[in-house]
Length: 403
Image (cartoon, rainbow, N blue to C red; front, side, top):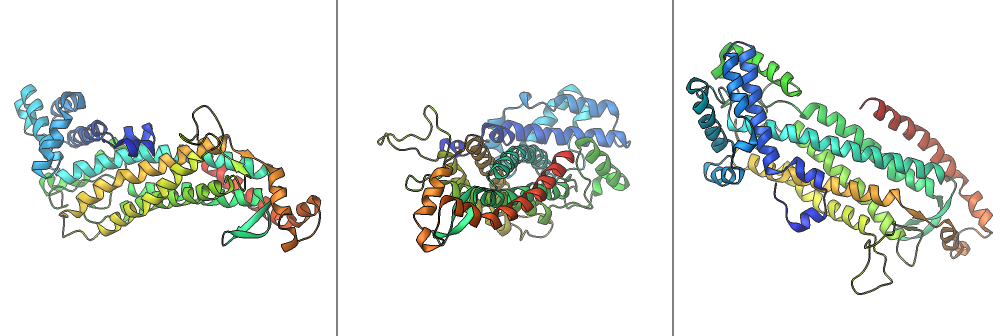
């Protein structure tokens, strides 16, 4: 896909590549290739026909920009793509040309292509969560007893520990990784129903083609076509939105604790990182900024998915197309935030002395005493952090062994 310069600023090159125009078209061609192979495997086509179709399913043989322009006129990118694919196949074998896209429909092609792309996108998110949760777990365990000022309603409250705070950042990410995997297992399914979802063109062989095609693509075989039953798919998108929200929470706390007047945490420094074009003294939390921008954009994308669910009859008009346009943005934002926070947490600078000084400024509001007293006061938070982190470590280990 083509993204604006400002979109690219807030995401990653890896996620842009997943939803790149050529990548999506290649995924659509992968659908056509798998459809023909599955039909040949159950006896609907000759194996030679399937092979001829497969040889033509190379995105390098297609003018992708021209297909996009033609798709606007046709109402679907799949229509000009299938037309061009038939031309290429027919040139090689006239009989095989008539079997291209046999029994499929435009939404089958595009939905399955988006499922294939989303599988890659989810792997990128899972990898990013693996790294971020591992880093946060290590920091939390190192600082279970480090006293820090807790703040409620944006004001100094009582004493907690940095480890307890980090555990609060970590727990939603561990849950997000679990829920994304669960939602992905349900939503990453083949779309194949034909014109109205009944597989009628393929007759009695239709269900067998679905099973075989799903196996070829490594996807779950659906109970039925889900052309306008978008609940599992939207649920997955909303899990990505929730992840962005959790990352935004971390970014909010990090940016507040990095304020010069607080100075308890700071993002890593480096040449060209976080500087100001006008104020040399500034050290801007740029990773938190990117994650906050992602979190701010996400609710609109999630709401659009929900708004598009009321699709008409067996195939939707306008709402499915709106969903398609919104879908990549969720993943672009989430991965941009993940990548930014991974960079920040990897080099996070912690000033425990400043944390004690900040506590000391408000000791008359809470507990009189020395820095040692602050450590003692923080013991309950430390014990809770240790308990929570034991469970989180077990959960992270389980996720790592089951990936």
